[in-house]
Image (cartoon, rainbow, N blue to C red; front, side):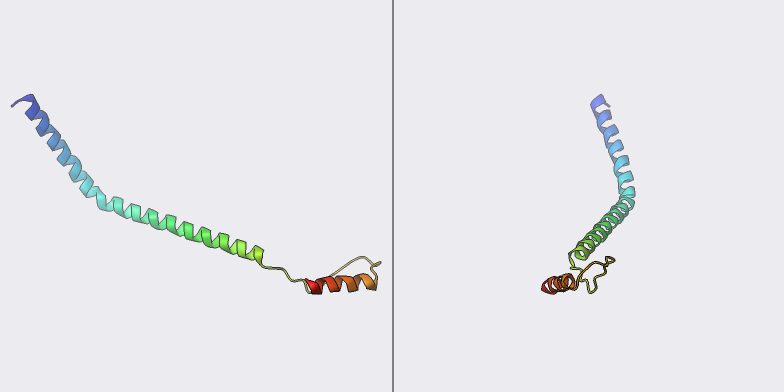
Length: 89
């Protein structure tokens, strides 16, 4: 047997051993990949929903039905102007 033939047989044996190991480990690897994709997708969906809800909450106008003031020197005319401005908005 020549050295080249021996090297070729040795490489073929190594290749078969690695291919068998990879074939045995592939289903577990595939399950981990699917689980990771599911987790990442879920996180992206939850994050996008949270961001959209936060943005939607800030876009809604806040309606004020009452105005409180602790200053006693406010005249009736100022209250009328404030009410008119509130009604125009």
